Length: 80
Image (tube, rainbow, N blue to C red):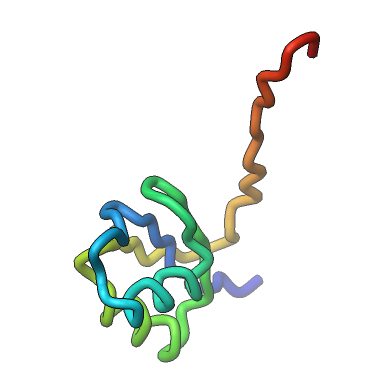
């Protein structure tokens, strides 16, 4: 079985006050807020996007299976 390489990116800085082009790039990676992580294939296109916004991101290159990350949200509603 082949082990595939992927990139784990995490947004570590705010997009407030950043140029619109950088906001669009970070959003295209699937990141919405500080601390949010995304697992992306290791391709030249993804690497180019990461390079343009590297000061806003933390990047890890991983190999193997992409973890099955399920984001759980706890809703705090009255009576729930």
